[in-house]
Image (tube, rainbow, N blue to C red; front, side, top):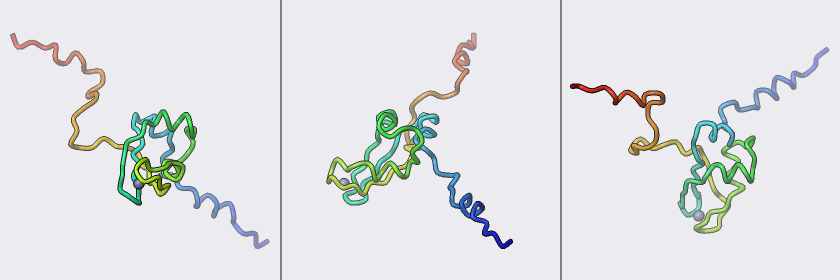
Length: 105
Ligand SMILES: [Zn+2]
């Protein structure tokens, strides 16, 4: 009697919303890195990180394993490099390649 529900506490501690490196790669994105010390930022090829860290590492935990190429600080933040809204690039509309084949004549 009187058992503590440690299992429930442990499950609450898990954060489902944190993406892993594997998730980011599956979504087709790279990793965006930001140095908290000097503000240097860069987009890093996710495949390079995959080879070093594996797919299971949460994206926020990649930063502490990196080093800023500008000031050599390890105070680096990481997040998925979502495409910026201003950029119009990449593939749009899968399976609609033939849409332009329509002719008005
Ligand atoms: Zn830096």
